[in-house]
Structures are given as structure tokens and as C-alpha cells.
Length: 140
Image (cartoon, rainbow, N blue to C red; front, side):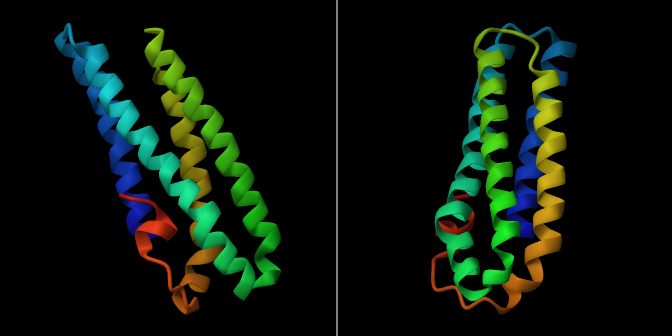
């Protein structure tokens, strides 16, 4: 889980760096580059959360029913993050400055990752998960 979160953090930084580079270079193709980076990052983040919701969290709930309230909160976070991904994608498509959307998504994502790691990393070490890691954590 930490490895996946680390890759998603790096992907977010790449999107943010592409914005900074495009602004400083005055690149004509900045929007198309941003669309590419944004779509890749957004798809990876959304895929990670869908995999957790459909594979990882049910396995944790079966083995540790006492964690169901934590899992519900994480699923609610996933819904909120999916909404924020949509607003970011809309801003990029409409050629509106995506920085506020990207910064907000990044802040919520970081808070979510830290909570998730605090609550679940120890459990994951003892979980007898038979699923492929890509199915449980997303196809990164």
C-alpha cells in the first residue's frame, strides 16, 4: 500500500511540475500535455480506489469486522476524491487554471493516504489475501 501511495504522490508531483514548466516555457502544447498527465494521474488514483473498494476492503472486513467503520470512512473518502477528480478534469477540459483543483485534490489525497496507512498497514501485514496485488491495490 505504501508503495502504491508513493507512486501516486510522484504522479501528482509530475502533474504539478508539468503545470509549472508549461507556465515558465509558455508552451503552446501545455494544455495537451496537462490533459495527458492529468488523465494518467486521475485514472491511476481512481483505479487504486476502485480496487480497494471491490477487492481489498471486503477481504479486510471479512477478516476484521471491527474495522468496518474505518473502511466505510475510507470508501466515503474515495467518493469525495472521485468527485474532486471530476472537477479537476472539467477544469482542464475548459482551459481553466487547474491549480486550485489539483492542490485541493492533493491535500485531500494526502490526508486520506495517511489515515489509511495508520489504520490498515498493520492489518495488511497479517491479512491472508489471495488476490493479485494489482486487483487489490490498482493497476499501477
